[in-house]
Amino acid sequence: MTKIRLAVLISGRGSNLQALIDACAKPGFPAEIAVVISNQPDALGLERAATAGIPAMIVDNAYFKGDKAGFEQSLTDTINQYNVDLICLAGFMRILSADFLARFKDKVINIHPSLLPAHKGLDTHASVLKAGDTAHGCSVHVVTPGMDEGDIILSRTVTVKKGDDEAALAARVLVEEHIAYPEAVRQIALKEITIRGGHVVRQGKTAKISQPETKMSHHDTHHAAPVADAEAIARSHQMWNAFTKGSTYAGGGVVLVLILLAVLVA
Ligand code: GRF
Image (tube, rainbow, N blue to C red; front, top):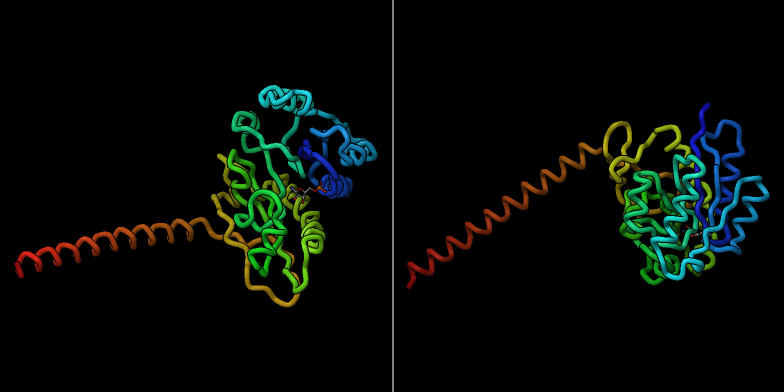
């Protein structure tokens, strides 16, 4: 079996990297980690890579003193040494430019600790608690220039329980992250999904993942978010367009009648 080759980009603890290392060590898993790259020289994840015998590289952004293009060029050169098929951001705390992403078109994915599109950015657990959400989770998504905005590959949900604080939520979501990331890589490696033109394509159709479930049972649910049928989405868009167009005409008609009435009364 040919395995796809991953570059895993990290900045710190590297527990998601560890989940990928463990998955790749299983017989029959269709991916291998070619290189781990950290922008932080003291990232714990670098030790995890070294322990697993994986090349561990540092591209320290601080060295480039704000020269983002220089940093990204160095990152690019490092990745290019390893003949990589997919770049997995795993707690990588740098925003990648459109130029960088264009070099690795449709090859960069990320894991985010929320049910995207809700709670983009940092401090997602606090944000979920503040919003009073009953469902939370993680999403693996395509990386695009907009932060946490690319198509969702899969998500996993946990219930927010009474008395949960940020730490409790973070711990429960992390368990799901460690299942979600290897599963997303597996699906990509086996071409169950492909990323094309920045979008997730499933079984030959460009599919948007529907909103994650918000109705929860008493138990946490552990599943990939359901995939909406692309044709159904297109149909609903058509219906919506027709409806809004119709409403515009209807609205126009009402205004016309009112003007005529006003003219008659005058
Ligand atoms: C994870 O919560 C991930 O979702 C987010 O950053 C964190 C990284 O954790 N992008 P780790 O370094 O993988 O332990």
